[in-house]
Amino acid sequence: MTSIPRRGLLAGAGSALLGLTLAGCDQIGRNPGVRATLARAEGLTMAAQRLILPRTALAREFTPADISPDFRANGSLRPAGTAYQNLVANDFADWRLEIGGLVERPLSLGLADLRARPARTQITRHDCVEGWSSIGQWTGARLSALLEEAGLKPEANYIVFHCADRLDTFAEGDRGLYYESIDLVDAFHEQTILAYQMNGADLPVKHGAPLRLRVERQLGYKHAKYVMRIEAVESFAHIAGGQGGFWEDRGYEWYAGI
Amino acid sequence: MDDPINPVRTRPRHSLLVRLTHWINVLVLLVLLGSGLQIFNAHPALYWGHASTFAEPWVAMTAEPKGQRLAGYTQVGGLKVETTGLLGLSDGQRRGFPAWATLPGYRSLAEGRRWHFFFAWLFVFNGLAYLAWGLASGHFRRDLAPRRAELSPRHLWTEIRDHLALRFPRGHYNTLQKAAYLAVIFGLLPLMVLSGLGMSPGVNAAWPWTFELFGGRQSARTVHFLSAMAIVAFVLVHIAMVLASGPLRQLRAMITGGEAPPPAPGAHP
Image (cartoon, rainbow over all chains, first blue to last red; front, side, top):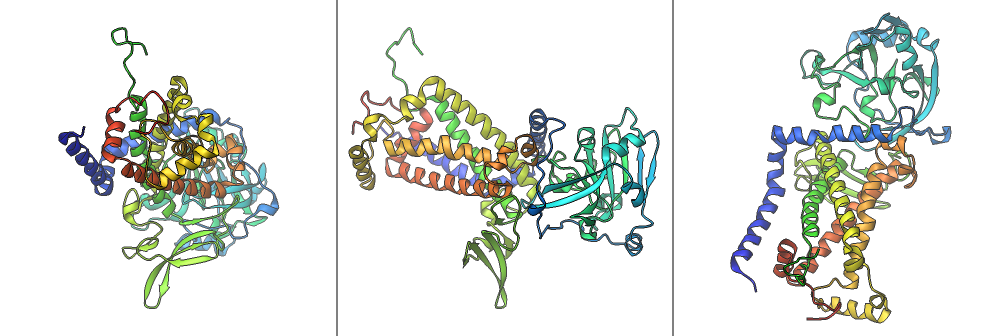
């Protein structure tokens, strides 16, 4: 019953498959067309999540007993440069958050101004793209209220967060600076806040003092630390690597709900 | 499917859709495993519950100094063993799983995730096609559901003895084989999808039960890892069984469809 050509064919197919999996995958993965194809899954994931995820659905909030005693800090732990050190030395009294871009009324707010704005406190789980999670309590100004105060122009599609830290010291110009962007669905979400407190105390430097974004329902790298300037834009294609964030410019998904 | 010219034409041992989805699954699961291990390597430790307890992982792969050199270690619960060259440290690099087991081979969480999520979608579409067809065509009922007589202790004992003696019935799936396939098709593979969704912050907000089901996101990550290892174990046994029961005949049947099964189930050749 066994025909020799078929046997040879099977053996050939088997060894080809093995060779493909062991040595060929890295080659295949470097092909730009393959990369573009693989990246398409992000659109499907985002569409599927937006379909099942109501705009107003909240990320699970936990109790004070759930707060992690060992909340891990990742990325920059303390921005370099004298400008930031001076801000720290003065307890951020000289720090101001600029809100501009496609807004009717650009804002410049100090920490006291932010504390006077509508606030929210939430105990949420922070999910790092690396796979770990920590639970923390965050208090901050609601981004939606700030954006309403500034008045978004109709052509604004995204909110960009420019940060004080240069996470990639080898990259030239603004390409090494940390930044992030979210769309208006997430910007106006109830749990999207600019946190100035963590676990009831002033936000520690390693966690992004004086201000970090909390955009629950997405992974940790979206939660920009050391926020200095907020810019409403029509498109983020012109900013740094054009992918909408520091890690996005390095191959990570812009939509980080997975 | 009635054929007006050959009304009594027998169906192949493995239908076209079973063969197609099977081989797609082979490729998809290989990519998911390699890229999954790449993702795992970004934080080679596992926890139970909602959050990570960094000082007390229940599984951790680390590289630590041993004399003048680094050594790889794997800790599971209270047990810690040296695994240099395989886990914790390989090719002189700190990494959970070695380069040959990950996709890509070099370290790239971003690329690992791209591979993983693209092929996760393929896995879901392929799995849904298989499930829909298996239900509609009667494949599950006819070929996979154990018959009453097959579940008698006497019959099972005979099958176990036959397996130990490497005697396998031809044509139809035996009961142990059916049980293994059913556990994978309706147990492990759906569990992979569920525990994967249990790790997604977006899906968690939409459907909180996806992480509550496991007792937290870190538990979901642990279950995802363990069920992946269980699938690897299944595949190893599956391949061993193919090798033990006529690999060329079995492979050919899974590619070309093979001969029709004999009319009566359970008959030895």
